[in-house]
Length: 208
Image 1 (cartoon, helix red, strand yellow):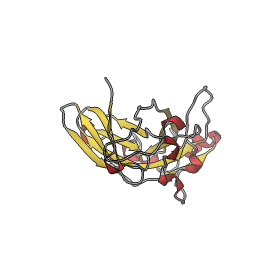
Image 2 (cartoon, rainbow, N blue to C red; image 1 turned 120 degrees about the vertical axis):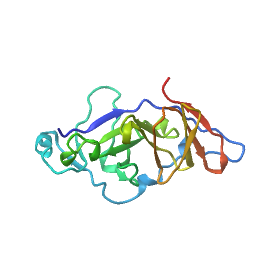
Image 3 (cartoon, rainbow, N blue to C red; image 1 turned 90 degrees about the vertical axis):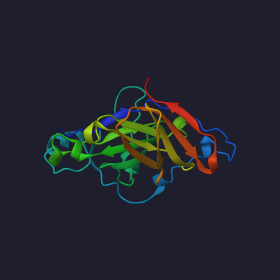
Image 4 (tube, helix red, strand yellow; image 1 turned 30 degrees about the horizontal axis):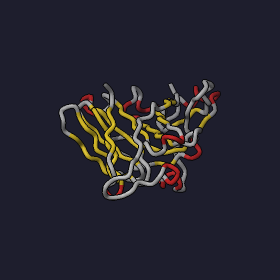
């Protein structure tokens, strides 16, 4: 069935602090350059009344224009979506949220039970106060052989991300276009954002 997944992200607290080799800009100065690129998103936006008919369309990203009615809902402003580099078999976008934050949108028809008619777009969103934190989405069991696929958005000062694993090892992912992605078969324990110039790194625990 054609559906647009709206997920209000439980924010991961990653406040930036000055480091020994540089200074990270304040939240009000933070920028997501990719949001300001031109070009169409490639996401088909439809009214709820057309959802049933759209389900018969060949696979393509579709967003059903339904605004959540519950208080405090955070969702993307689809008109602002800009496509990011494709990684791990996913198409991804960055968009503004209705609460002046950013959203990460993901689409992967190969993971659908009906890849020929896959349309669902997953959205993870933050608010203005969370701009310095970015957005992290962990898709457990979605990769080959049940591996975890990790996607994230980070503001311009961040140049790399280090993901800590349960076995004590870590994976470093470069940041390009305000985004990163990686795949691992291990349980994730933490995410570290590395800012430009070697600024202070904050370790964030994931899960319990």
